[in-house]
Image (cartoon, rainbow, N blue to C red; front, side, top):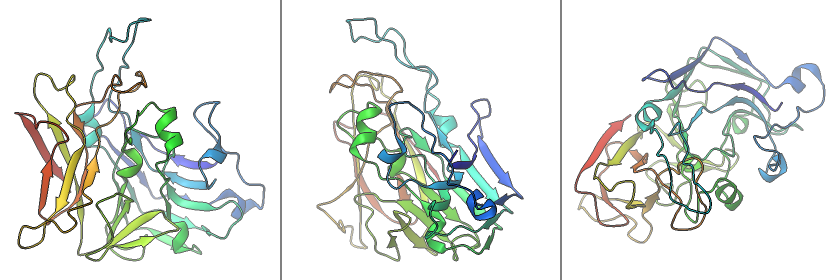
Length: 307
């Protein structure tokens, strides 16, 4: 198929660190001269043509579901007869580490449009952070190093995200720890309203991403509603405003909004679809933010920053 390597986190380990080490990654067509690989999708109703552009992927970014049991609804009632088993702590601490690998013959001009790293365009829950180090890049185009799929309306509808965005494709974060992959130390981030270019970040249209070179760095916050009614009362979205040195909002009209992940299978009609009571926003480390909730704030909230 069109994906060369796909390494997914394990449910059985709390750290959930997936590693790819000392490997050679290259598009098959540039080696064998054969046809482009066939495109693989999860469901028969999906089509690779729906996720434009169709690409050949060297390494698929690791993704994670945030719960292990789906809601079940006895017809015609929409009242769930069981609750999921949340795995958000396990998912939050998940990461993909790629080190000591060679990326060869990735060219954005190639007929199969190969990309060294790319998202799976249908993931809605969580794409774990990726950390790259000690890489060797051979005969490859910088524009072919990454592609992040757009979080479009088809994705939202088919996966029952309801009228609100699912966050997986809006929360992608890769860090080149030593500059051996992207040519400089820094972070590649998915597009997000409220995280506009500035302060050193720029848009890379070929990646469909922001590039934020060092000394700027980012981290992921785990925010969880701990109130007793957390599963029944929605407080989404979280809203973040970055503040200047005087405590004023830099962009008061456009906060960065973050929704919580959907819960596997659930009704699509608003407002009965289920959302889990936690969030995974990506923010700039060392910056000062103002944050509020979309509804009355929880009385008890848990925060954890990883960076």
